[in-house]
Figure 1: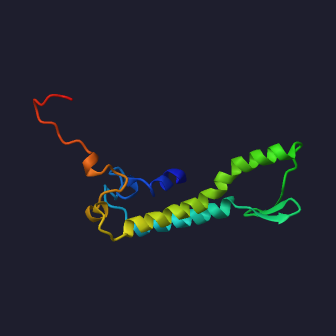
Figure 2: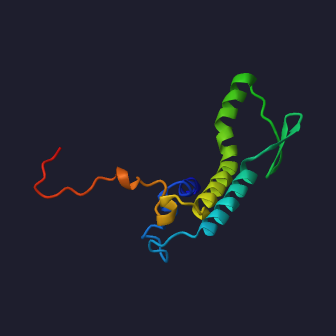
Length: 140
């Protein structure tokens, strides 16, 4: 669920709430509401999934000091564990970075037409949209 909400920081549906959400009914999302929730979630994820190495194969986690498990083939298992666990540990800081980018994008005051007209920067530009076809016009 949290991963899907993080995607809302980079997609257009993170700017306007879907109509099916009670009490929101398609209204614009306030930037600070999304940013505060994302930063708090990123901090929580960082605390939950970060271990501080203490030495002697021990790490300090939210749950206390944990001894590192010894593997029979230490190099291969250690590499596999690093590949599998590192993305989870990076999830919190990445969410915080997404929140900062979301805030900067939503509060920017520029001459950009997307910012002036309130359209999503992830939507197709007006020139990329096809004009309506007149009736009786041949298909190309």
